[in-house]
Image (cartoon, rainbow, N blue to C red; front, side, top):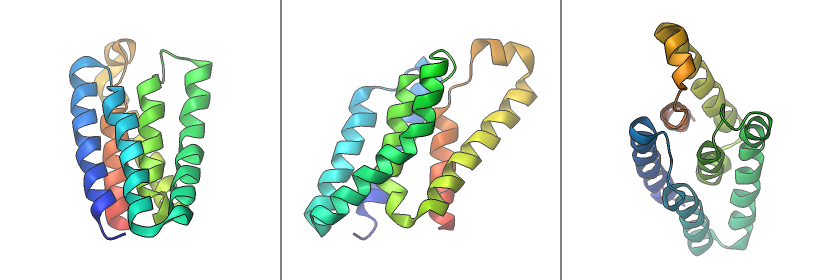
Length: 143
């Protein structure tokens, strides 16, 4: 597969992070379009088996954020859930350790930011896409 999917995904993650920081929204064209693009690239380069694997990892990766979104839609937005799909489709084939590392790094960085920003920062809400993107990129580079 080379690095085609990873480079495309990193680009989408960075743009999504910028959108989330500025508007507190992640456009579906980025998250869902990026996920669909990853699946198309995977299928074109390595066939149906890789598409199935990428789709499976995407669904698995989005499960945790989806549960958080159902429990508290204000705490974890739908855009974050869809961006997790992109991370799973992009980096899932690198293995479960990369996905777990991505989620863990994103969570730790967001908690540190929340603690440093104080209660006012927590009341306004934290955009999670920058942390998800940073965690995904760092885990990909380490994996």
